[in-house]
Length: 312
Image (cartoon, rainbow, N blue to C red; front, side):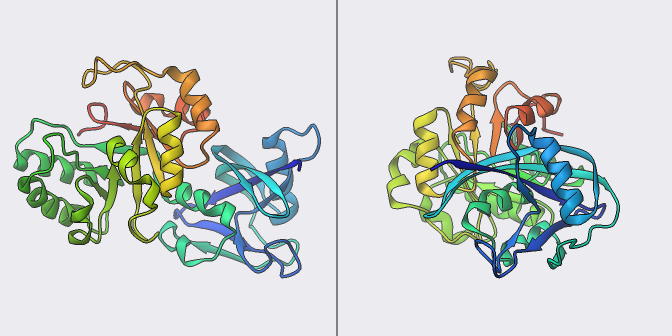
């Protein structure tokens, strides 16, 4: 079955809200919400297809857009490649030129709307920022918490409380304070044994590669309302993350790092190749910082993750 190439747009307004459209009842997956876009014509460049589709469908002119994520999905009756772009600048007032209802929704509200199954990774990508801060080791608790507070004040929206010394009670106490600092401002991702999950309902969970290998066959350990992430280093671990139903991953190390000098770096070419076959948001980690964000986007990644380059 031939794969149908479709462009879709995560269109952001000045207030950060995202534009979605409702599919006509007569369409494939009718009645569900979607990100605006349409089919790429034979020989047409995806960006040009995006510009054409949004002009025809919404009456707007795209002024600023970048690749966000590519998702392959196989429905029983058709195979699609969703080529998704983030549109951050446009002119004109969007309207349903084909009579389709539109809605501007906050990223937080997106999961309240029913989308086709192929759109779930796009919903995740639309809700996630392009930087993922991982806390450093070797700091005393007060210093660590002050750093988290500064990071949140500076706009950090996704923070992992790293647990380098294993899973001890001190980490749990620290996690309670970190959850409080992030509440309503940033998404905190914790690490630790899955037995702790029930103690931190507001936090997401970031699995180690060892946990991924141990638990992947059991599937997702909690409902989709909570963020689930995993650390991956190769194609096998990415496949396990897919099996477990994670929302996003870190892929590392891209380049040599101070923290793991012994690890063999993937390099940009291999990282790009691995991302292309995955289809969920990927943060590149290891020897990268904010300056590599564009290169990460060009590789198909959601953005960059790091410790040293991001710590305030």
